[in-house]
Length: 326
Image 1 (tube, rainbow, N blue to C red):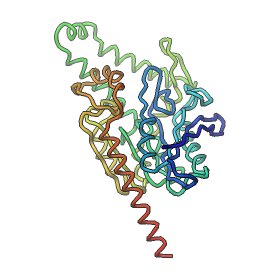
Image 2 (image 1 turned 90 degrees about the vertical axis):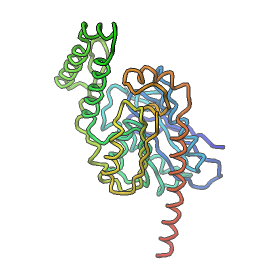
Image 3 (image 1 turned 45 degrees about the vertical axis):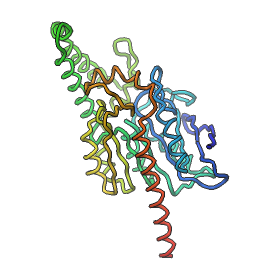
Image 4 (image 1 turned 90 degrees about the horizontal axis):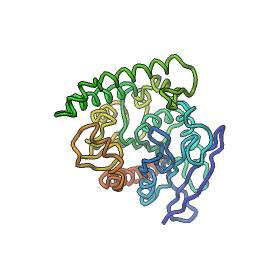
């Protein structure tokens, strides 16, 4: 059993959130703060046409282990105020920090025992939030360990490999139409348009682009704050994740000076679901929506549960030692 409390977190752009408490009367609970991936995502990790429900399902996991959780609609999404397209990376960090500080003040939250849980872009935001206020644990799901432009350049190269490997008539057609060159030119044109503008939002080929966020991503190298994280860390990525490099898991472990537990889950995608589709960016991305009919990967949930139990036992041991010292 659990209790969900709807709340509005005050600020220049108030954020709508759900604080979920385990069943347990008036005691104080350790807290998990959930930080989203990229895009216009609500508190459950859902975007239009992409009902991922990642944070909704993971809330059940952490509550079952005796943790409270808080998850929120991004600025300008769901019931939160503001404009999503006008938001930059600094704004994302500030919003996550505001949610963390607000939740810590709740009467049922143990403010000395807080964990940040990030998915995808949330794995970039969480270490930067840690620079503002230290927390007691961090869970990074499908994260990176380098500047985001390096990851997006790798993604484009993987996409080009996919296009060039297509065989038969379709492959011939793609080559005749020079699709790979057109994609590269479009990307270069968009980059130029972003750099030539100071506007938070621009229109490119009739589509609204969050220009401020795109420009600011180049300023953030997550490897730097990772090197300052002194709390226990859990980092997990799947072998079928075509959005991030599985090899970044080892980099995260090397950067983090504290205890860092890493796991690679076979056949798990960036959506945190398993797939039988072969490793190919286009095939896996085309299958993403279909994969969302399944629940979040059971092995991932088990790894998180086990880590949370170990984390809680470790905290109890530390508190006992502190009492002996006193």
